[in-house]
Image 1: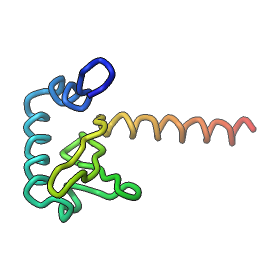
Image 2: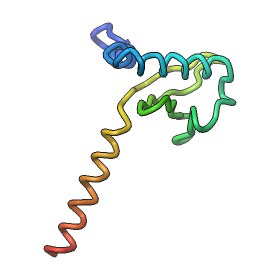
Image 3: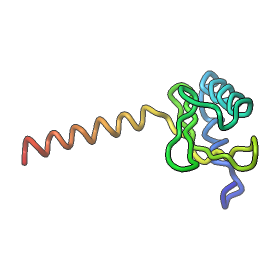
Image 4: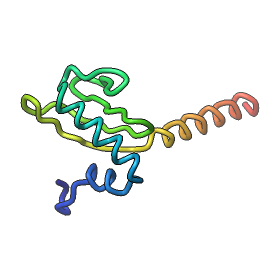
Length: 99
């Protein structure tokens, strides 16, 4: 919960189309079932104890709290990251041409 008493990861999930919500719920079920043994393509270590849950084009950061309890920190659409990377590459290319 944040300072507003809201749960941003849950709000993010509830705003997604039904099919994407189903993918996330399935990934969460797998996380509950396999815990820290869940690996690619469903989960990927990011840094230290931070992990990324990877259902379809959605990404959610999480960490293990106690035993089989996990805390979901943040969710986002993967394509936003791809667009940002493409934009950065374009700017770098322009800098090389104009520089």
